[in-house]
Image (cartoon, one colour):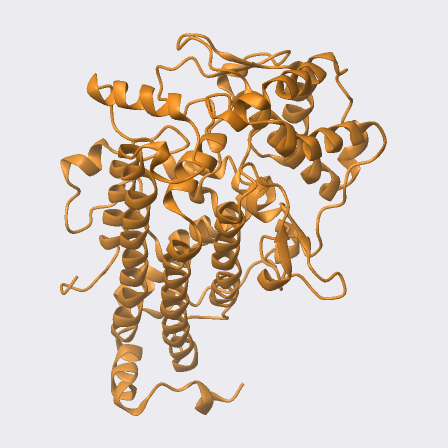
Length: 475
């Protein structure tokens, strides 16, 4: 390695030299005791990150009936709460589609267990079918649970346990696995992906998934930075410190790019379409809050203990990896400035850990390995003056990203919850709006995310936990 190529700019050289004298060598000169697992061990591809390199293969044989039902769903079903003329015209075909699920046998998924990609495909298909089944049914009384038939529930729980993922629709099902190649002769990339399954059938929904995919792909470079940091021979020589400083600068740029990508959703996804046409399909068992009856998985013992929230951006393994690397303390375990507000203390501090249960098990294992790594970059920055500013820049870039996420959530969820469905042509769910307005008038509670969490409180707590990781007094 050419040391000259890695040296910082001249005005930083003196600071770097001084920091070498101040570093505590003993804490960071520990040799690597064993070889770290490679990304492939965690189902992470060097080119596509948490996406598989190729589209998932379709299911065949006895499982083809699932594939056919998913193909038919978008055409035959509408939201059960939608009283529009088009939706009412689909009521008959919807009843027939759901009755087919009730008559199906429970298909053994053991033959799929030898192929990871077929298991993932089975999870995608079954999870989409479950959400179609529940949300296309006419609304029941508020105190009546939705029953998912055993023909869907039992195989979904079986493949989920094998994959180590929640038995419900997840971020992986809607983004990581839900695509085909535009040109099969070219490798997977955002521009060569076409998202296949759409609840609403709108380009807005496809653009929503594409925006998430762009953020994920931009995060692949972050994974490389993290891996290179954890594989440095030591963290005390000038070459290593210079590299860490440069990589923190790269990391700041990547986070800023992801902020730009997220901001771009406003140009391609209409808030009304998202809130009224798409979001209701995402809702999981606890979306209405902890007191709602939720879902029952027929034939599954103790199904009330299953993780059954809907898909969420909080299930992105890329963003969790960034939080772990920068040592963001979402659980408020460490004493940091400024002290958390009373609202922060009331937030759901277990949210991030719970969201990991909705990730593929191998991806969650990767995050666990990161968390177990003894090389805290925040502690290194505390000890090394030359790293404090680049570390704080990365942290504050992440804080700004979360500020932006709050504004997007306010526009797409909070503001839309106060709108009416007919404010945008084609938006359904008039009866939902009536109940929502009645609920607000009765003071039944705050706007919730698809997973049932108090949205504003949760996002503010995440933003403030990020800000408290910064080291400098200026922040």
